[in-house]
Each structure stands twice: as C-alpha cells, then as structure tokens.
Image (cartoon, rainbow, N blue to C red; front, side, top):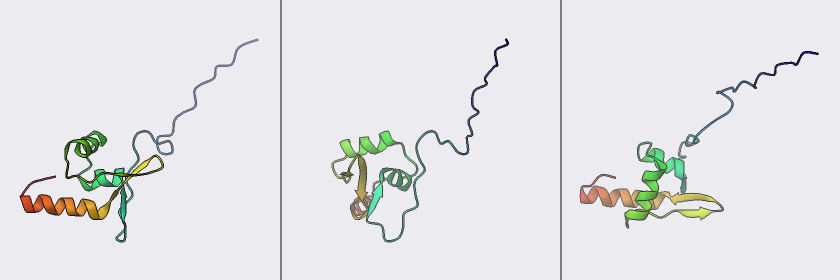
Amino acid sequence: MATKKVSPKPVNVMTERLGPRKSIPVPPDAVWLSTNQVLARYGDRSQMWLWRKVELDPHFPKPIKFGRLNFFRLAALEAYEKSLAAAGQDA
C-alpha cells in the first residue's frame, strides 16, 4: 500500500491578511481616532514612533483605552498640531 503525499494548503494572499491592518478613513464627524488612523494622519508612521511620542512628548495627547483598544481624541490632536504650528515646529 502506497502512502499518499499530502501537499500543504496554499495560502491565498488576497484573503488571509498578515501584518497590521490598514486604517479606515476618518469620517467628517469623528470624535475618536484609532491608533492606525493616528499613524496614517502623521504620514504612516510606525507604532513605535507613536508610543515614543506618547511617552516622551509631554504635550502629545494621551490615548484613552476602550477595552484593549487605544483611541485618541481628534480635538486633542488638532489642538496639539495647532500648538506646534504656532511654535514653528514639525510633528
């Protein structure tokens, strides 16, 4: 009796996502931004950049936790950006 060779299931790259998720566009009436939306807002920065910014920049808005997810208040981010613009700095 011959053994049947079983090949591994092929991975369909289009249906099985690996890595971080893409951010959802921010609706005009948004109050909260997800971490990925904040990263996209600042030019597709890395998560490490964001958490260093939160830890090291005392003026950068702190996230609010909803369960295990972190969200940033849009008004606080806009106020932070205005303060940087007034000071002539870059985010």
